[in-house]
Length: 301
Image (cartoon, rainbow, N blue to C red):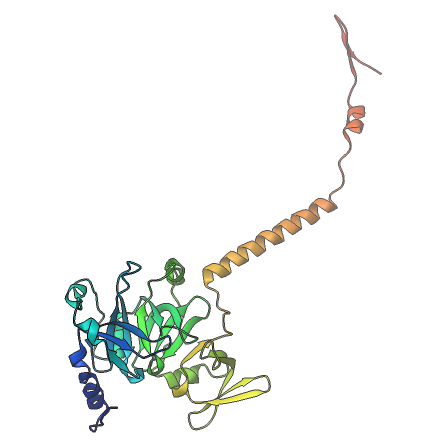
């Protein structure tokens, strides 16, 4: 669809400029699937575009979706709607994240709760904790902890505003620990000989022990299965089994509950081993018997 003019950056800018006439108009990105959305083309940069999806039926604020152009298969203009569109009113309420490239855009969203992709098994929600160069970024998720995402495979990104945001905000009450490497390939090198989860859910999801081999290739060993892979084809990778992450505050609560249960069991055992107390009848017999008369008081023998 695009013509190549020598360099990759020049090719990107030429491709994005092809859609400049559509800026401010109603378009549909993708013709089907979870990534397909209809909205106003707000902005277009060298390798991504910004789509404002206006949901007036639910009276919600317009959602901004940032699509990476290298994945966009089709863009369709709605000429009928564009004849009476109200884009000028919409732009006054929008706060757009901007960057020269898609990686620069992600830097402006650092610390935000974001959603990667619009649906399906590749969709992920979490807090963007760091962008490491132009190759990958770290996303803190509730179930898998720090997930490292290959920027090249991200189709779209948007700020997460649906549901209970406090569940995701609570993840960063403590300082998250994550791995910082110069490239996605270097990250694989650091994760070598560790149990990792690759590509999240779906048919491509798998986990096992990562082993580095020759010529920049890696193998993933799971029982009798051996998968050969290259880092550039991997979409996401995280340390540990899928869904096994527990924040420190959850771990401390579990430890406190374990301590309480242990103390209760010890107290029960101690009570069982204590000698039984004498009955009240025997205690009454040992007491002195005192006889009282009108003028005298003495002990009975």
